[in-house]
Picture 1: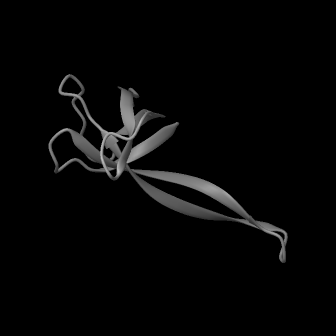
Picture 2: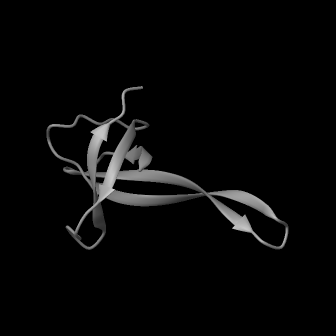
Length: 75
């Protein structure tokens, strides 16, 4: 899934933001929502804030990390 990097302050971990649309049945409209996820970052990928990344789900690596960065999308 394509996400945007929010924070890369921790070593080997990045906080990413995923935007999605949520349908509200009462007014028959969509609203935009965001979700923050933690992802494992290997040393070979150089990531800065606001970079677009592709992440994938994996087994739980820690209490909050269940995703891993697969690649950085060229922008």
